[in-house]
Image (cartoon, rainbow, N blue to C red):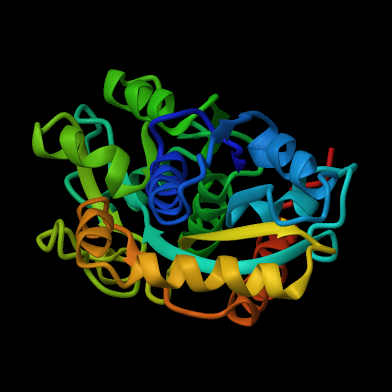
Length: 291
């Protein structure tokens, strides 16, 4: 069983289904994707943490997994110690998209507009404690602006309300946003990676566009229950590594704007610990208190 803490159709769900499909073909055993959305991924994570430690329950985790302690006072598991890293899968930046009616042509003009209207412009996210929420708080801090957070129940609703004008801007993955960007329904102000994306090379990085040093990436990685036997973890990792080397898999991920992350379980564990430290500092600076 492959747990996904978000609704079908998003980047996390798509990647989980790609991995599960390959596993099913290789092992001749059905790998079922189980979407258990809500609470920024906590529901799926709790199910995984409390599952039997046999390697038969997997979680497609994202950066939200290590942000949760900064925004939720009570988490029914230990974010690090109740999980065994299996394999990193990929990483994606966010597009910073704005409503067409905003009187700003680029990110610098938007920052100037936001400074002239502190607390009057808002940003839409898939929910409190999401990586998009913290990424926008990082932008608030680094750009010296005050945008108001409006949480939704997913990235697509947040994007749709940005298009409709209920929100000024949103952070969203290229996988979810490309059709709307190419249709000219939103203004792309920047991309949150250190380098421009090959899927939208004309869009500058946020650092280039006016906020030097800014970078916010969502990673995707497979976890299982902490006490799963090491030989089983090794077998799962070897299968995922094989899948990530397939040309068709890499091509599909590139089309989603997701970079393949090659690495062992230890690399994923380090990414989790590093991001726990980074995003907890952002939450503290933004004045976010666990609720």
